[in-house]
Amino acid sequence: MTSLTRPRRAFAHRLDVKVSPYLYIAPFFLLFGAVGLFPLVYTAYVSMTDWNLLDTGRDWVGLANYAELMADPYFWNALFNTVSLWLLSTVPQLLAALFIAHMLNRSLKAKTFFRMGVLLPNVTSIVAVTIIFAQLFGRDFGMVNWLLGVFGAEPIDWAAGTLSSHLAISLIVIWRWTGYNALIYLAAMQAIPGHLYEAATIDGAGQVTQFWRITIPLLRPTIIFTAVVSTIGGLQIMAEPLLFQAGTGNPTGGSDRQFQTVALYLYEQGFARYEFGYASAIAWTLAVVIVIMALVNFTITRRIKSA
Image (cartoon, rainbow, N blue to C red; front, side, top):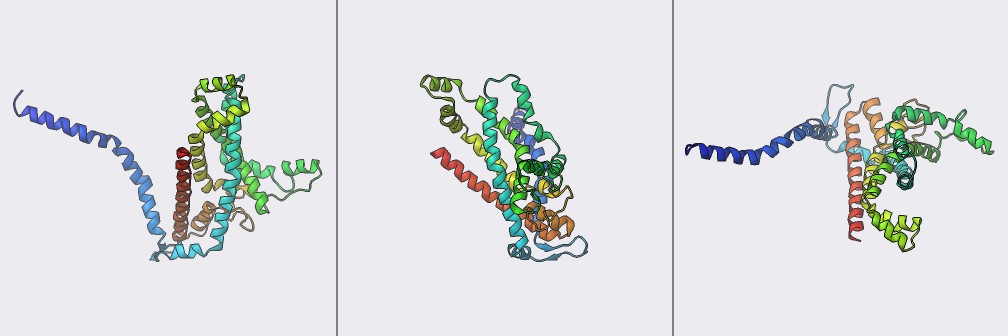
């Protein structure tokens, strides 16, 4: 081996060690830049323009769209509906998922069948599910009102009221996502060492005590994860309220906008009124709201871990 070959090989080795890791991860960042970062930056630019798809011009207006949005009562109504639906669906959903996971973690026959069964609502088409639920909650011929009539209650126009529509839509979300979260909890429960339960049993602790004193504390990171993911998904809810009004796909979310969410209001402005600038401002405002909620969850996470 010549004296010139050794430096070249050493240089090639150093180059391979330092450059290769960046080349391996480069495809992800190139793809993210093309389909993630660029649309994000471009939406921020569009949000500062007065751009209607039916017009040829595009005027720079700065923060005028955001100022108009802060004074828009329809936006605040949509934000209230979004938070209401999120609260009504997330809390019962996670509690039900915990209970189902606890049941599936016990000695049951045909455990695989039941575990696959709880995931079926999540793999079902959301369009088909929402349309079916809209029929179930129908005012005149819905099965829910029929059951209420059996017990002597008056029929309810579920889509007409704010609370009734929120309860119905939240039930769709709960039905769809409870099984998914239950399997996440089940996986975390199976990672808990069995000797902890054996020691608790020897000490005389019952099933309920073991659940609250052992299972729940060790599931805290998983519960926080599902809470954060459910928060992000709940604040972006769109398909359920869009199709709930008898499957009509009305973007106003009811006759009085009683269940119009922020994502649905964005859809109305962008694809019904073609106000792309205003819709982009709504999109960025919603992103800020989601980030704030994520920071709140992060703060709670740190406090729980330090407790």
